[in-house]
Image (cartoon, rainbow, N blue to C red; front, top):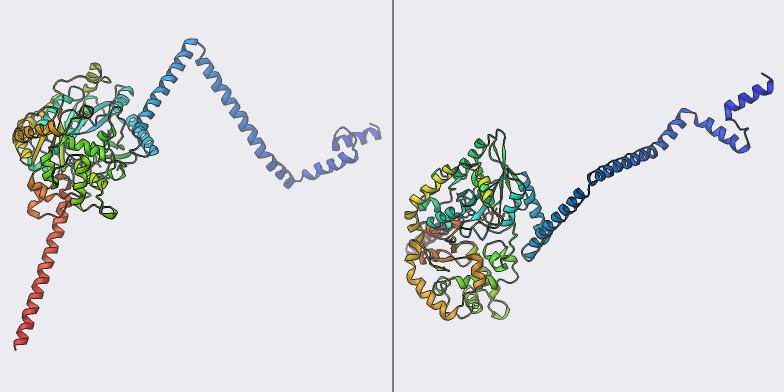
Amino acid sequence: MSKTKKKKAKRIALHGKSRPTEGNKSEGLGRLKQKSPSAMRRAKDRKKPEEIGKQRLLQLQEKQRISKEQQLIKRKSLNSFQDDILQRQKDFEIKEVEMQNLEKHVNFENENSRKAYFREFKKVVEASDVILEVLDARDPLGCRCPQVEQAVIQSGTNKKIVLVLNKIDLVSKEIVEKWIKYLRNEFPTVAFKSSTQLQNKNLKRSNVPVTQATVELLNSSACVGADCLMKLLGNYCRNLDIKTAITVGVVGFPNVGKSSLINSLKRSRSCSVGATPGMTKCLQEIHLDKHIKLLDCPGIVMATSTSDAAMILRNCVKIELLVDPLPPVEAILRRCNKPQIMEFYGVPDFRTPLEFLALLAKRQGKLKKGGLPDCDKAAKSVLIDWTGGRISYFTHPPETHTLPTHVSAEIVTEMGKAFDWDELEKGNQEVLAESSTVQMGFCMETAGMTQGFPAEGGCDLAMEGALVEDLELRDETESMDDDQDTEFGPMTVEMKSVKAKSSASSEAAPKPVDLKDILYVDPLHQGQALKAAGKKRKKQQKRADKLGTKLSDTLTSAMNFSF
Ligand SMILES: Nc1nc2c(ncn2[C@@H]2O[C@H](COP(=O)(O)OP(=O)(O)OP(=O)(O)O)[C@@H](O)[C@H]2O)c(=O)[nH]1
């Protein structure tokens, strides 16, 4: 190799093919410089994020390509494409109807929380094997939610619905029996009375079947009917040979006692309970034992055809937030015996609901500026009496049973398959056997009237006089609103007897009563009344002690003076 050729080869090895110009001379130097290890590392670091970004982009594009291909394969045939569109449309329509139902009662809860509650409810339905739909025994049909049942039915036949008739202590046993008979045409129904105890642990649970429960037991704060419900769930596991745990969702209207039912089964205060609707805000998991997990769900309102007044009377609304409490009070007055309501509230005769509220406000000292009666406050106090059970009411089941549109005979058979109906029937039969004595006890405490048609049973017979009198009165002064009555069906409204009334104040919180009168207090408020009675007694004791000391001091000083 000639000398020039050797030089050229050396140059090419160092700087590449081209001859170094001024520009690439410095580049070449730069490259030489970069070859130092630290420079190399720096260069590497500079490149890294770009490379990573590129890589990610490629991956994403690849993924998108694959998913597009998959979708295309899916929609290859026109039929499947059409099906897909129809399904999407159907889903959209269902969602829209659900949202509209939620939006209907926009005055009740703020919209976001209602939607959030609905999402929680959906989660509960998805996660549960068995859904306990809790119904208030006073108005089971009114607080039944077809949309809830529909959602469960649509989510597959492996999910079962059980109806729990809660708050049976607030109605007569005959009515409970009738409702059980009516409802079991559709789903297994369990009669229940939740524990209303205030303590956190060791909530009392009676082993006595609901059927054999005495008035005292039902009026106590102990839970009744838990054994029957536990047996039903146990049988479900056994019949389906479920070795692992089952999830039981507890759903229903606000304030029907879902959380109280869970606490009663758990025997501790695992969920917060309160007389105002909307206590439960989000899904809550409670492990009953290693076989049963309970899910507490916020109460949801999705009724389509009921008025706001009806929903307020069903305790689905926070009374303190009501903008116009007059319509529900009107609805109450329409259903009440006028002389009894006058006696109950100690007001003279009135012609219109507004006049009644004005009289009541004056009597209760609820006055606005300038001494004007505060009818809103008075109306709210009446509503509190209604929802708190001081004005008690209960509806009667229709005489003949017809399946609701969303439940077919096949669904009824399918849903009932997994449960031991005989066992359930046995429990309910026991209720019927004992009901007559309890019915008497229930009626002694109350006086009432039936709207729609007279109810059978001792209670209504005992009140026959009042009923006739009232019907005559209503003919003259009050016209029944048919729309309102279809919302509730035949209903009996009852006022507490004079003895009970004297212990119940017109305010939400009961006035302190003597310990001996505690039995006459509404079971809903017995815990509070007991506390108040204890305090009252202590106060009386203190006062007596003070008086005694004062007296002895006076006597001593008098003696000193004489000496
Ligand atoms: N008398 C009586 N009262 C009950 C019974 N069960 C529940 N309650 C009362 O009903 C009110 C509502 O009970 P909750 O358990 O908070 O009802 P909920 O359905 O969980 O209510 P939300 O959280 O609003 O959905 C409380 O004041 C309870 O003490 C029952 O069997 N008998």
